[in-house]
Image (cartoon, helix red, strand yellow):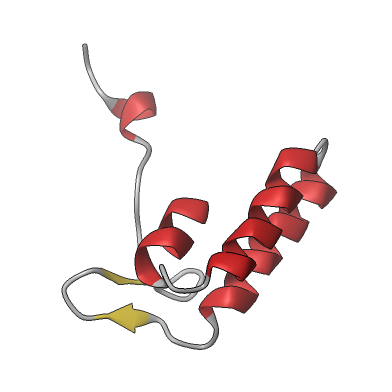
Length: 72
């Protein structure tokens, strides 16, 4: 999430620092979700950045973790 924030809104340094601070202090799922909420708030309502990324609503897209499904 922080990588997306830094890539999509690089001019928002104060917001990044705030969300990064939440991430550094996260010790459980609830405090992790505080960081996720911070990034979502910083990104705002925009869901599409042409040539970069599109963020789909829940249950409207699919992705996978390559490290989980990759055959070595």
